[in-house]
Amino acid sequence: MLTLLNLLKDGRFHSGQALGSALGVSRSAVWKQLQQLEAELGLSIHKVRGRGYQLAAPLTLLEPAEVRGAMPSCDWPVLVFDSIDSTNAEALRAIERREAAPFVVLAERQMAGRGRRGRKWVSPFAENIYYSLVLRIDGGMRQLEGLSLVVGLAVMQVLREFGIPGAGLKWPNDVLVGQKKIAGILLELVGDPADVCHVVLGVGINVNMQMSDEVDQQWTSMRLQAGKAFDRNHLVAELCAMLQKYLERHQAGGFPAIQAEWEQNHLWQGRAVSLIAGANQIDGEVLGIDSQGALRLKVSGVEKVFSGGELSLRLRNDS
Image 1 (tube, rainbow, N blue to C red):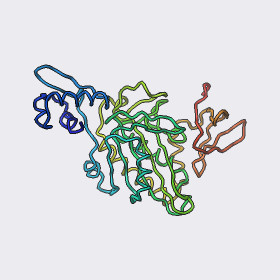
Image 2: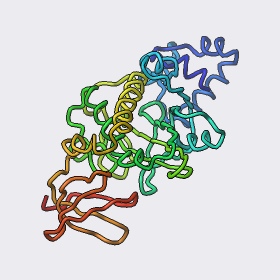
Image 3: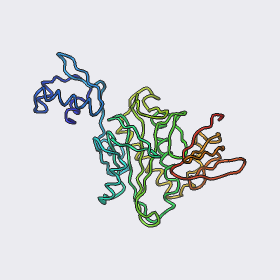
């Protein structure tokens, strides 16, 4: 089926006979595979008598060689999957198989993409970036401090370099344009943080997605913001290079070396917010973050500090 997709990805018309000859199957077998492509991958295929079959829009697939060719300064191995439960899940399985870190896992589609707090990450085929970077951490809790915020800052900078100037940060793990989410980060840790552990840096970026009925919050994409499609291979290469740069800064100086830059790009700095922790709600004003990446809030005139993966931050109606 994916061989057929590679024949069609140029967006031109291809006759059933030509496709059948290339695949070594009958025209009726081609028709069945086309129906599978539409049903399983959600692709739209035009069928015109006398001309053949054409994808509604040309398709650029992820290619490890293209990614590596565009990032000569970074030698991380890149694994690409056509369809997978989630890149983070595959990264965790690779750690169990003792794959040597660092390495990157990419997918054209996720069947069970995950966001923070158990949310589903909508993952249509060949439209966005579903990315996981695996790092080995040797006996350094300091290397984990504020790490998800560092990743968010790197993602934001890549979006700006690709022409999305309004991209900014929301504590702890979101990248927004205005009030709309364009990217998210999910970190997962295995092993002993005090000794040897692995951390999976999961990144989802809405790249070329233009519509979805499944997303349960305000969202946008690079294409919706810029009015053009983007080459995801180049975007992945730039993401690797930017992550490498920020991770080296973090390793050299810890999170305090990056703290001020993160605060300067926090869209909700100084805003009135509600912090949701389970059934509890805490109202306050965002003062910033501390040297470990925890949120500093002014609550009833008193500064309080909050951290934890299950917290959710929302703007108050009067902000």
